[in-house]
Length: 296
Image (cartoon, rainbow, N blue to C red):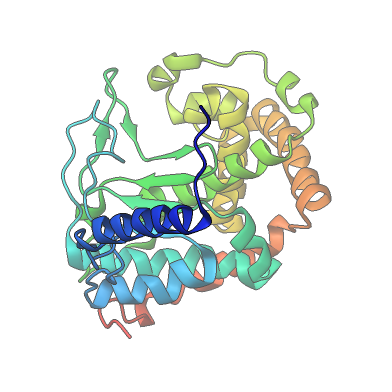
């Protein structure tokens, strides 16, 4: 026998279900606290300065606090000293970022600069006894070591170039050629790359073999980056003295490779390496006038 329900009964049933649902929902207390951390991070004066001078204009994460996740655990490393980190942050901005920006404009350095610069207080020693001056990872991150050796009372531009700014220009050269490759003709000029044995090659012998440094003899890409960094961080008298030490054969090889470097930077990036060197050298000569402590 079929059952027939009146419209009143149907409406009553629907109403009852709705009441039960609302009653059930009303018993739940929703937490007004967001599951996401929306609070602004606590920043000290240096953090605020970094935000203003690195993060906002260039999208660079300048890391001076030791971060175990970002550090190479194959080395025994220590954190960078705070005051020396402040000084180096100002020097990197003035001698490296501002030099490229003066020549190429802010858009270029913002687009191609590494997105992270990390400072480590101690040197990093390889198993064969060599020291790592810096590393670049996929064009995204540059790590600078031995920050704690900076003598704030007696700044030595040659020492700063050796440990930091030669490294910055070297690693940035890698970023550029990893983005747009240079002519493979470069790789064919020198026939006697030393691989890891470069540590046993003296600087004098490297020059006579046609390498601007012993590290340049390790492999072609390092050779390329060394030519850029050494040329830019030294004046013409130093460069010419190295060519003289290299002798006729060695200097001929160095100049042949450097011609490719110079043409590559000009045609691929619009960078005149001679003008870049002039800017870097002019700025290097004025670091004694910089305030490396005040954060404003």
